[in-house]
Length: 166
Image (cartoon, rainbow, N blue to C red; front, side, top):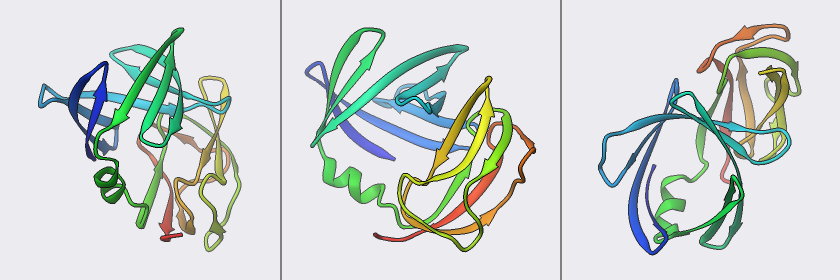
């Protein structure tokens, strides 16, 4: 995913590639770095990078994102949101993978089920917390690769979703 963003009056080109280990991020063609992104059950996200964790909340208002982290508010503007939307359109197969090691507690859907964006798919226990993995888009469950009670590692395929354009 490639997009332009404005932060503190400076424009940046940000390139993000999802891989089996999380995300590879490059800002302004600098050396890429690896991060893990965890969607917290309680809301917000956690970024794991170089052995450190960074908790943050995000609120979207049209092309502006308000990011709150460690008591600081940052405003980020998407300079070209139409290009970003076109590149990230949720059509095709979506692969749900474990973002960190854990144990599968509950599977909330079955192969063939039609699910809506944001609907819970799998509950996984990681770091002594239950995390609900949600559908990134509406679609049909194509396959489920794990069973309740399974221990999984970071990057393990959990579920495949054939997403629709709605």
